[in-house]
Length: 458
Image 1 (tube, rainbow, N blue to C red):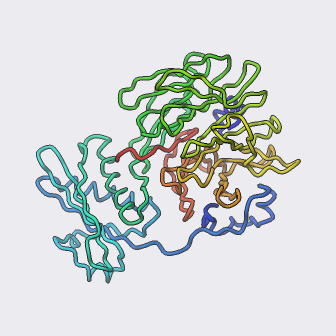
Image 2 (image 1 turned 90 degrees about the vertical axis):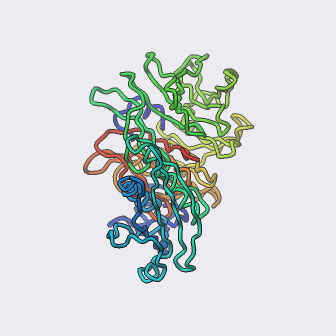
Image 3 (image 1 turned 135 degrees about the vertical axis):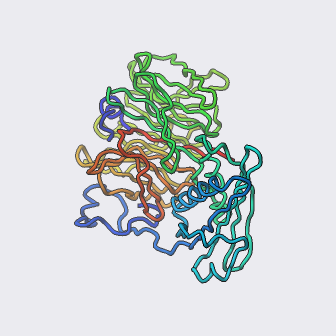
């Protein structure tokens, strides 16, 4: 995000593995048209089309007064696994399918490769979800585990079930799921103020985090998911604050030099934070150690506006955007964190006399890709782009419909959340960069700058 965009367009915020990316360009959009939009962006990619494994969900059972809880847990697990974009989910089966024993021959006839069976046990006021993963082809139980459930009347109930859903993904693929996560974002209210809101990854439990009657934006999650950094104007000047989500306590990051403080980000160590300081004659990216409460250090400094820092998963490198090549043409830059300020190179698809406009980078948790949004020159809509570092920095386009901006990776390194506008208005969307599946997370609000959390249950 550029400073001009950040300051003056708060109301107007602005594929992919080989990705196995687009199932085809939109009607009327040919390769030459895309080349006109984004010089240097790779073309001819197709989304992955191989069949997803069929996964059946046997109706969950409940015992000792947990029947209603079992039905709720089943619905949550089914939707979570569908949203994982890794299975063709077979659910909504009739109650007659409830079985004490798994009939492998029946499920094989139904075409299932995997079967999830669950039961909820009530012990006093507690509930436990017992989940089993069956390999239908080999007719055996692959995994079985018990998952404590939170009180069904609290928002944490869904999160406790999400943890079970993520276990299924890990059992099958050996990779993390995304159900037990949340997205925090800045939401513009009718009176012009903005506060932080948070929502579960399935779009449920939307709730407000801050209420300062001011402007709060640019949230960032700590590595363990218990704290959120953000910028707030509540003191009159943009300053950076850290919110403890468990206690509600807040503290301000010191501001020892003149300027406006924006776009904070945590280092993977969870102690150091990086942020932009703009104004005061010279601008740049700086760091501060929150645990030691000291050590204000310079990473970059100069007349250009360097903002939106994001660290690589190992903390050795830093990506950010800067207008070093011209006020109206911010680009994405990559540099070593150890060699502060030195040898930063352009990552976005820059071409002489057609520099484009590229901002808001975020580094994939897998370390192999960087996502950001951009447009060509000063016209056109923003679209989500991905630079594939492991493929000689090939750049591919993820979105084509409407206006899309401010992307953030999920912890699985394949799903991306972003703000988008459609004919019906603004919303938050999630796209799977492998299959191309896209869903609306939140609609009916004016969101900005979403950030995806790490896994919130372990």
